[in-house]
Length: 367
Image 1 (tube, rainbow, N blue to C red):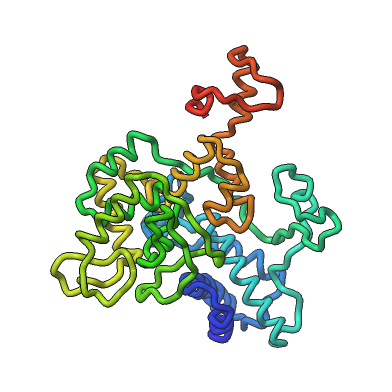
Image 2 (cartoon, helix red, strand yellow):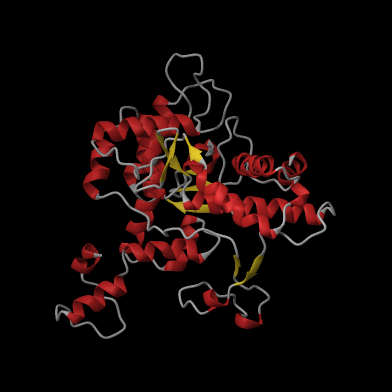
């Protein structure tokens, strides 16, 4: 397993990905110990027992989940079971591990968690299709061993919730950071890894670059660098005021968002944990401390606003930095203008031509 993790590091996978794979493979090793098997003795017949083992695993992690979770009884104490998405991630990690073992000639059998062609997915109309169509070598694949999970739609913040959140922010740094993610659609890691030279006030834009030099591990998720225009005056004003008047001087770092105050960590770059903590405190003060309200919800809010405002799917994909249009398409499920327009026509409330969305502001508001 150590060799596999070193292989992931050599491929320059994210440190968070490597840590997640290590935790996931630990479940495999516990199962092998329980079954008295060596890792190279695992066969497809054992994978069903492995799935049943994962369904019995308890977790002590306090997750901010929005829906009900399966719970199991352990010595009279009720514990939450692993979520279906977590189990599928563990199965994917195990599959990758055995694929590495096959690649390095350490495993002479087929991958126990093998994949097969998913012909049903090919017939899904909303699925992204390669440019060459059926002539392309890309085929949708599915693991034969998986747990059915719920595909949730993103939940954007309402206008009232956004206003309440911006009102309770206590520092100029927090205001600039939240506005940057809200009006620019930046991921938390992208905002934290931003440097002073990435801000172009004259062109009213920021450049999201792929960096790995943040001392606390903050980094952009995507490998594609992109330009994000910021035409909201309040956002650039908040960033400008923070950098000029409130950002610690003589820090030795060019990262935009630093720790202030007079503590021992002053002038250090802000971390993921610090961002989550300040955001959680602000949400409690604003009265919107819900499980789904996270820093990443600001990105969902921005994407939903842009889609409701009429931005096309391709341009929204470029602005958000999605590698696949399927990632962008989930926002169309939150508010589909075509569905709302057809619904209004069916009720006799709209006289738009068939097949065309309405430009009525009430339609956008309703969506």
